[in-house]
Image (cartoon, rainbow, N blue to C red; front, side, top):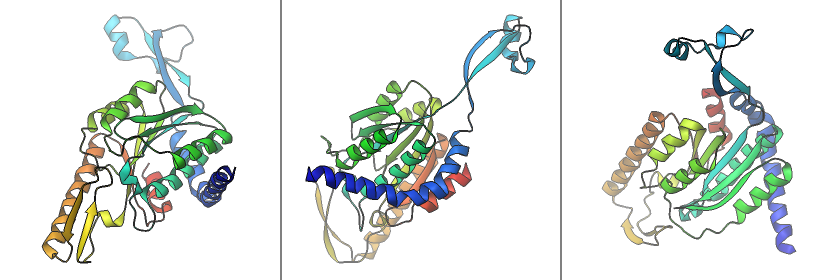
Length: 288
């Protein structure tokens, strides 16, 4: 009982913390960005008297020498999925862990979807899909999702988005909004399944980074441990060449990541754990 109360208290605090951002920034922008699709392609059929000639598909008409039109159906409520990396690297953080920070922004976006009467679903992933909760509507469902996310213990500590993204593509049938939340520190070839997912769905990559992953301070000898493999390494951070080399490598990886996302037409929100996440969200909505 006490554990249940603690969980409810944590989620309620999360609701209060994100409320101002949801009310002031997200909801209106969310509606305009994600509701702009309006209609969805249904089928091509024979032209009938009274049909709008603007709907004629001229390529198909020319091919078969007979008028055909594109028919659309009105797109009502959206489906919003969150593909959340719950691997070991999420526990890293200078003041707040990447997992905790991502939970705040996930909650904000979920509450925005709730206000818009959209369904929300979740994939919790490591090197596989650890848990899948299908889309449903309602506040009770959103609170359940946040409870599961905040208390979930994965079977694997490894990050490999390739297989999970393949599974996501196979699972989601109807066009949806898909947020992929990860630090994207991943050596797997996840770009191909991401590209396939992007062709059918509106995919947004939400990248969570800790400042200490971008540069290492001069604090002498320290022991670093990989949260996913458990491998330990002793490094001398007082070595300026080492620090500069590390910073260059990180900058190159960042540039490569952003270039790959642009090539695949995947919008990206990059967020530092010590940063007010309303700033990158505002930029994201403005860019869209």
